[in-house]
Length: 94
Image (cartoon, rainbow, N blue to C red; front, side, top):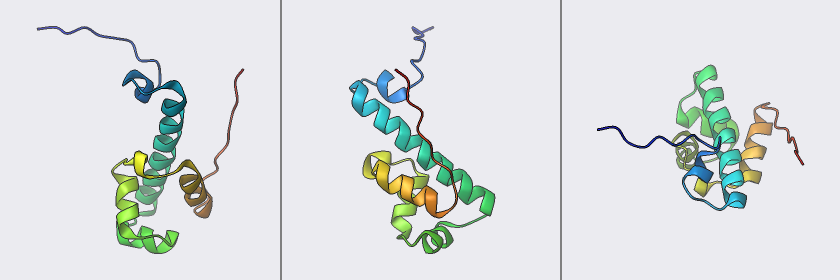
């Protein structure tokens, strides 16, 4: 049985029905969490090792790796990225 296919807007959170302002923040959080997860993988770090390097608890690392972005602020994730040298930029479109 074939279901209806809807083209994505490019923001899964918007597609899931979040209000536009919330969807944008959630997408940014997810992108930053993914960048941190990829960094952990490249470095070959366990969650415990990552926690030590970032100066945070292992459960916080678990939240990042599991994509629990609703539990993490944008500011917090930007700060963690900065600690490990992940460049974060903002591009505005009118």
